[in-house]
Image 1 (cartoon, rainbow, N blue to C red):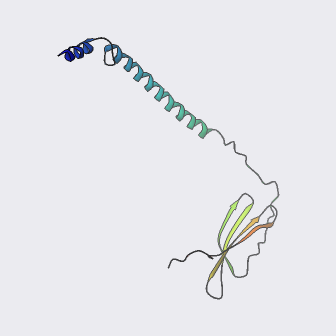
Image 2 (image 1 turned 180 degrees about the vertical axis):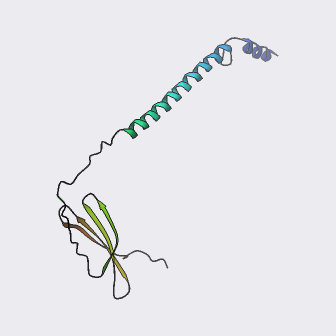
Image 3 (image 1 turned 90 degrees about the vertical axis):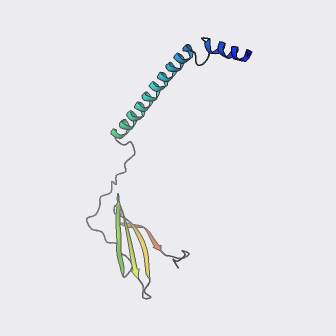
Length: 133
């Protein structure tokens, strides 16, 4: 029975985590943490809006070379243009060639429109690539 008396005395005391003083301190801590979370979320949303509305600070490169009105790009004989893409003054042309054996060869040409010259010519092949069989 002595243990029961100790437990009753602890429950009736005004100290401890579940006492009125402890509960009041816990309520204050919860209110402060809630305010901190709400303010933090507001700051994050404000920063996202600010970053989205400000102009980009990334450097933009502009070609100062004057583009000719006409260009001539020599592709291999029998080439069929499959796709073209333009990025700044660079033109990318993807093409295929049907060979006499019935196989298709592919290639890519990167052409600089500002300098009127081929930057790169890439032959694409399926060497070393496993077939679907």
